[in-house]
Amino acid sequence: MKILVTGGTGYIGSHTVVLLIQEGYEVIILDNLSNSKIEVLDSIKEITNIKPQFYQVDLLDYDGVKKIFQENEISGVIHFAGLKAVGESVRIPLDYYNNNITGTLNLLRIMNEHNVKNIIFSSSATVYGMNNESPLYETMPLSTTNPYGATKRMIEDIMRDLYVSDNEWSIVLLRYFNPIGAHESALIGENPNGIPNNLLPYIALVAVGKLDHLNVFGNDYDTIDGTGVRDYIHVVDLAMGHIKALKYAMDHTGAEAINLGTGNGTSVLEIVKAFESASGQHIEYVIQPRRPGDVATCFANSNKAKELLGWSATKNINDMCVDGWNFIAHVTNN
Image (cartoon, rainbow, N blue to C red):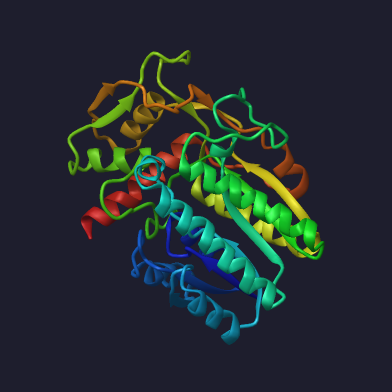
């Protein structure tokens, strides 16, 4: 069975590709390499002994995407590709709306033309906005505070409307919380181009001396230590959620939104301490003012994932930090 993975050389995509191969799927990767590296394919091969078929194509290239479907008998799609930095989305909203929404519309149109009606979509907890109290349930009202989150919410709406128009579609909207960590082999992990937007790769670069300090935005929230609390999930647990969702989609029609989180909250300073313990390095940090749009606490209720997919997170914060440190140490030493 051939599965197309858009954004498959990226952080979450590459871990999902590894598990797909290990589960016996044939994987085709589409990626424009705007925020990932071609060398990831070699790492995937080193882990799995299989190098997946790869197309360097942008989803905005309609004919390029169409060619992939013409050349391959695809059974389903896992859709990661998209711009994903909240702050950047505020600065260049038109780029985010064009890339994320137009790219997805192109993908869905081409899937429809080729009668491929199974898709797992990489959504986000950002669709819950600022007005819901944690734990966050899939039934809560949605709102967004930035263009990145707005694109995720709009794409969810588009996909639900698509199912209403054609009940043969099987769509799973996976709302991620905060993925961190890396593969236990230390061969793949979060290694973005440029300065990281996410917490753990930023901490890791401080640990190896490539950055002077971590900026902690706000220490006056109503939390255990005043810093923001988030639901951090090991990227391998998250990737396994996609395998379970794909199996579910192959057996069910519909459009289901499902949280993927641990159900536990961890503060920024708790993450810093755990990473110091994992790495043996001191993490210098500087308290900065709160960022607009940040909530104090955000964590999932993941009961639906357990009930529908048979999935729950298995790894803890220490696992996440140890694996994340081993990966960045491997990258730095090679």
